[in-house]
Length: 252
Image (tube, rainbow, N blue to C red; front, side, top):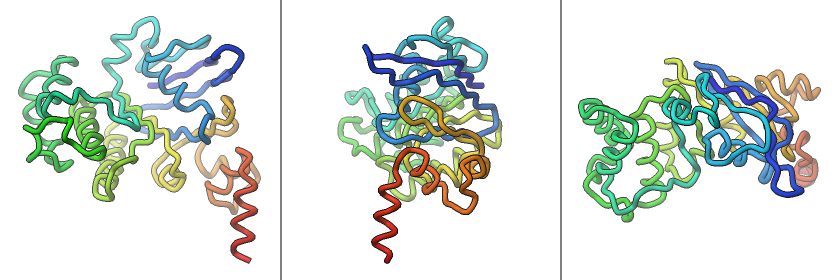
């Protein structure tokens, strides 16, 4: 469903993404992990067609995001870490706008749109302007609109930021249920416990290069850290040994 092949992105003399290749399949949650500045956001922006790669290709559901962007984006849903919405619309007007953009008929809008607004606790706010929403409410509206479309591929960039415990639990349950129904889910997160709990496979990127990939168990085995947590492995692989040293000293 997602195939990234020898992807490169340069900003002048700086290489943000360096020859990245990976694939995420239908019916799996694929985690994309890395420290700040590792190249995660640049990769995701290129996946979404928001930024052109220096070289390499990205296909979504068999469609090249650069050569056939309409077909690729039709199959693609996106939940960014910071929701960017039309704030002069009401919540329901925004849902209707998304439905019109993706040619979703009114019956589906009424059914799925109302259902997800209710699930995420926004039904009583559907007539309220988005500009009056908190960050968490905006994120829940963005998630509701994404799931209303039922895309084949869903990309999430730090999706739990701003959500309260109820919203976070709902999102996790919905992601797992959607995965079980065949959706391809690509998720960037800093919360390694969530990645280990939810992701079928994952890749760790550091300084623009994929340094490890596979299941959590495979990554531990390849890094000779079978008895370590994913967080410990991540820190060792990305140069965070100083953090592990401080934690050890605090425990002594």
